[in-house]
Amino acid sequence: MRIILGVGGGIAAYKSASLLRLFKEAGHDVTVMPTDAAEKFVGRATWEALSGNPVSNSVFDDVESVNHVRLGQEADLVVVCPATADLLARAAAGLAGDLLTNTLLVATAPVVFVPAMHTEMWQHPATVANVATLRSRGSTVMDPAVGRLTGKDTGPGRLPEPAEIYAFITSGLADGTLKQRPTAASGSAASLATQQGTSAVSAPDAAASGFAPDAAEVVSNVPAAEPGPLAGKRVLITAGGTREPLDPVRFLGNRSSGKQGVALARAAAAAGAEVELIAAHLEVAIPDGIKSSTVETALDLREATLEAAARADVVIMAAAVADFRPSEVTDSKIKKRDDDEDPVITLVRNPDILVEIVQQRGAAGTPLIIGFAAETGDDRGDVLDYARSKLERKGCDLLVLNRVGRDLVFGQDDTEITVLARSGAEPQTHRGSKDSAAAAVIKRIVAELSG
Ligand code: CTP
Image 1 (cartoon, rainbow, N blue to C red):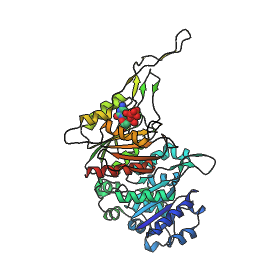
Image 2 (image 1 turned 90 degrees about the vertical axis):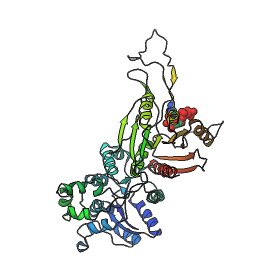
Image 3 (image 1 turned 180 degrees about the vertical axis):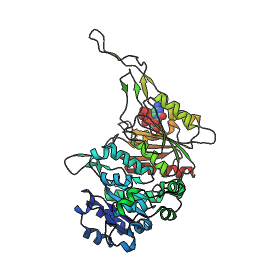
Image 4 (image 1 turned 45 degrees about the vertical axis):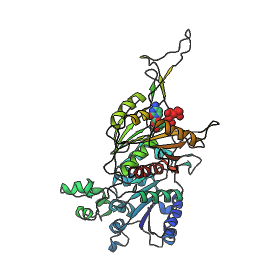
């Protein structure tokens, strides 16, 4: 396979050398494209020695070979590692000031960005929007790992270990979740521009590089995208935590960030599904291009989910639904008064939405229903025992067990899941980023649908 390894200017650039070695040991032909800033961290000689290929970051080197176009066209895979905030922004804006960003505009092969930056930069709305843009255009952006950063700080933003990146990429290529860029046939900018008789390559590219290919050239080199394994399937996903109001300013909630549900929505869309996301409270942005609606309470979620489940082929209940809600919601704020007794909150049970979807399902057995279970285990039972009995009780087809505890907690980017099947198939465990866990769940769903 011909791989382009783009390297951004961050301290994690040195880890990219290990990723390069993994690709080389697997027999791939790797061309490294460091940005100018990346060369301040790792020198060109290292990349050339490890890859066995010449290294450049300029569109003005080796001009006669038209490298700024050829390398992207010939690539079977483009990996950008580390992807800095600056590089993500330039890629999202479609700028083409160096060889790597030119290549990103030309390549139709799967593109994987592996971000690494400080937590504040990763969580900045500009970066969040850039990541969403890149994902909506068919690129894969891995979630960064959580851990020690360059300084004394820790948090999300750390580059995942090279072996994990390698495993994420190989499993994504194997199961089709890493896909080619949507092309002319699917309404990309290039096809739209061509239909309208204008240039597909916009001003910034041409201005920055002076070598921008014209629209016809881009379109003629675009192979038709393969339909994903979930093409034609309607996948309904619920995500996030419900909020149960007490009064106009207070609610009972939970720690769900919605990251796993959103990662599932992305993975299902990448597999070609028509995705509908019903979002309770989320701490992450909904990816562009995904049909979504928002709800607040378990009762709202129930109504929206039962209605949408009736037209779905697959329902994934990743939402953290409050089991109880306050029996009374006051119209005005509950005040503390010295003369009064402290208030007592009485709770009533919420309906179990997952059980109701199972009950509502037709004789044909559709939709396929996937439940989630966050379990810790205790002295009365092991996590797997609890999950097995939950699977029985709820009656869904698959149950994704999330081990909570041992620093695998809500809101983290890394997770450990075990997928249990009602058919009795051997449980499968996966540990890694929420994106890679989502890919594993989607792969299992594809297998289940194909019998
Ligand atoms: N769920 C649901 N409706 C509820 C509670 C949970 O649809 N009222 C769904 C969740 O979306 C998840 C699955 O059921 O897919 C399991 O959720 P969990 O909270 O682990 O299960 P509970 O039924 O609350 O079981 P327990 O509290 O006994 O662990």
